Image 1 (tube, helix red, strand yellow):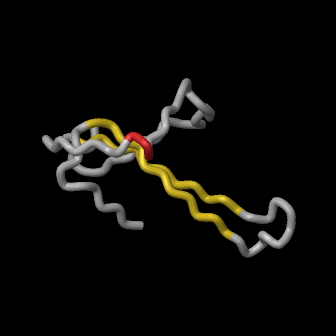
Image 2 (tube, one colour):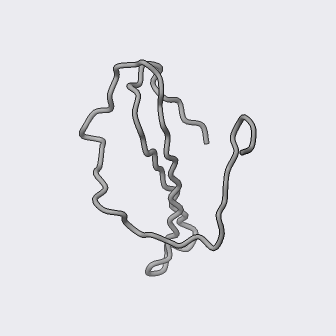
Amino acid sequence: MKIQLPSNLAPGNYFVCHEIIALHLATSLSGAEFYPACLQLMVGASGTEVPDPSGLVSFVGKGLVYPQPMEERLYITGNRT
């Protein structure tokens, strides 16, 4: 999947989600399969454009919390610490 952010996007934390709905089993009750995918972004640019509030949602509280069986780290760039 490729996402193009607006070049003048204001700095801040963003949470982008999309969902694929598989309909190959949708002929039976509860047969559709939902595959959500989300990405949390921190934009550090100097833009001024903010998203239209009608397309935004608010998350109250922690939501669902799942304990991790072990600590995981994802290194994108730079040195490991």
